[in-house]
Image (cartoon, rainbow, N blue to C red; front, side, top):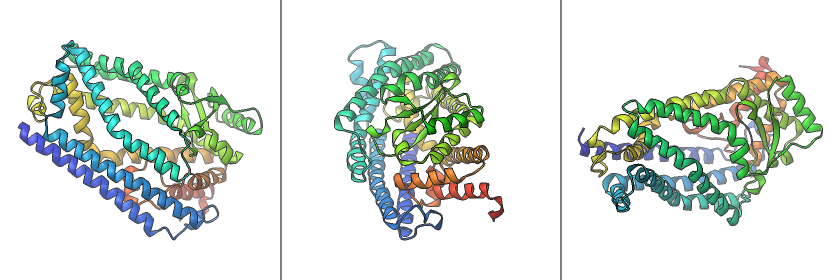
Length: 422
């Protein structure tokens, strides 16, 4: 392909992707508006019409921001695909006469910084306008700035060595550099999954063990009954940033932890929290974290293999204004072109994620011998988080990593009472 045909293909792909994503979010909002007068029977005991109205209004506000950000992102990619803005940055950095490896790392870091700055207005609008309007935001401007500075510090501590290693492999390891690089990244991911709970996340949030009492005793019995090698059950001060509730499982080896948001403790009952923890244990039981890592490593392998081919394809670089191929330009252009070239596969990954959630729900029912706790927890989370009750089926299939609350509740009801299955 010529550089001109590559440029046209890129512009066509990003336009199709943008049109598809915008169509999906508009369909979803219209579908939710159409059903805003109908509280589903399965949620009638926990959700009133006024809360349903608020959830649709919350969706509308987020949808508007999404539409603007999609349109802005598309225009930015059009500018990149039709001008020499990336090579101009390259030429400016060349004036510093840095060695090739530091030059490449600085180029990638500068692009990452520019991307963060361009996304900053949308980030600020979401937190300080939308989340505040609907009573979720607890982040102060001071805390927001501190978080950004800490994130920048992590980039310096982790991002620079990682980028340096990748570019060094590309430059020196020969034609099969992408294999060694993938193995190095896999090892780095495994290391992060172990040290992140103890070294990185405490940099942003405070964690303390769940206090002694009936809830801790209940969860301790649950963990022992499931033969789950848990290091601890921790409470995170999520309320200092948001009133949203959540819980998650993290870590490998001896660093396994279940983390409960402090907001969850104040809103949910003990049986509901027990069910949520059982659900997280279900993810461990089915090795979902390990499967996710394997999938991530495989995707990295495929991606780096493609990058290795791009480096020897001058027309690809010329399509975006680069005179000569280079490792950092290949990584940059791969990051630009891979999403629009592969967005059609997104439903496969979300379907796998939803399958994981169903498996964890099934494990919860098997472990607790009942589904009531999980059903009540889902109903409470729907109400407190203003979850979308009626997402468009196509939108949910493409973008939802979790089944809809109604789908989960219906399946849990059947699991608890198989006789009511259709």
